[in-house]
Length: 453
Ligand SMILES: Cc1cc2nc3c(=O)[nH]c(=O)nc-3n(C[C@H](O)[C@H](O)[C@H](O)COP(=O)(O)OP(=O)(O)OC[C@H]3O[C@@H](n4cnc5c(N)ncnc54)[C@H](O)[C@@H]3O)c2cc1C
Image 1 (cartoon, helix red, strand yellow):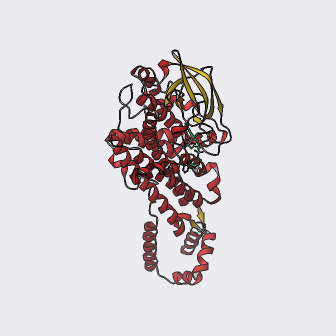
Image 2 (cartoon, helix red, strand yellow; image 1 turned 180 degrees about the vertical axis):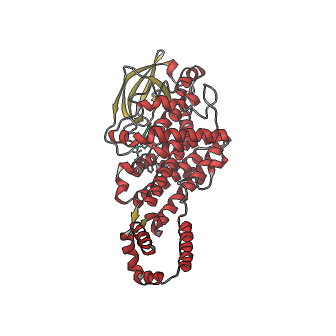
Image 3 (cartoon, helix red, strand yellow; image 1 turned 90 degrees about the vertical axis):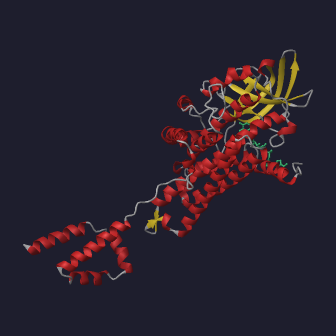
């Protein structure tokens, strides 16, 4: 009977053995010798050995740390109320957007159905005062941009154009009547905005070289020209159009309403980045705008630049979000993906990539956090915002390319998310002032010499 029980026990144990693993182990140690030695142990010695092995196995099963790109615990700086807003946005992005992000990116369409849900988060014009806006610190505007971009840079661009560039133009350059008319409904996303500054022939040189003109005829303005790359323009209710007044040679801003017969949009096809964003080529042909729809406080490009200063800070946060999303996806992947019989996260060269990614993400976070603190204190300058845009867009490119690298072939497949971040980082690098133009802004500030031309 004793022998029968022993055989039963051994059969049971054998069922649990992973013979592939055993094969690999036997290449490294003399298994036969070990089995022979164990067989010679008495019951007490066997029990002791079992206890020792069980304790060792328990210690080996260490819990893996959570995936979190906030390494220096910046979240601890947020109040409970602000942290709740951050988590509300994160939850929305992870549950409503993440599952559909690749599909819409792939078919180059915008998921219009998310707009009412996004509106419910109450995060549009989040740092503006009055006009039903929440008047939160600019740091929160940044956190929101980061959270949205961490999941989908396209949605973050859509949001940045609407809430930053379009609402911001009205907030900073509109009359009281214009603010009252547009900002509350834009805050609720009942009206969506776009911002048209760049042109087919004039991008970086737009400050002094705009070709789109405006001429005042009686009580109306007549606009002619083209605008290129204008996000949201295919479906926006109001498009801010910047044009050069022929008489004064100064930039003016206009609220162009959807349906204006002098205004035509064509969707830009075949983008390899931000495919979900609907960018348009706009053609203005004798487009008539009443004086009441001219932004009353936009009298020169200096006023346009005020808007760009504010939104450029947001783009730096967006770059951080893009990098963080790629880093977190890559980290998760390296813990699961096994090569040579172990998770690739156990390889030194992979850990080196992960640490360089994290260092960049953490440096970016520190920089943009301080940037927004300056903004909250009313101390933000063009060069502050430009430095952050330069640094973050460069570092993001580095992070996403490492994220793609540690994922091997899967790094170029959309379904693994990182490929989308790699492509979208390219758009961040170029829009709201290229790396060169923002470098020239900082260069001018620190040397005292303008090197634009
Ligand atoms: C996806 C996307 C969305 C966009 N959304 C909008 C939008 O909603 N509204 C809007 O108005 N615009 C938008 N833009 C336009 C964007 O702001 C411009 O692409 C950007 O300002 C650069 O202009 P450009 O593409 O004409 O490049 P160019 O100005 O032609 O520049 C080409 C290259 O020359 C370099 N360069 C130019 N001048 C100098 C110089 N003096 N010294 C050194 N190098 C120089 C540039 O840095 C760049 O590398 C968007 C662009 C993209 C790609």
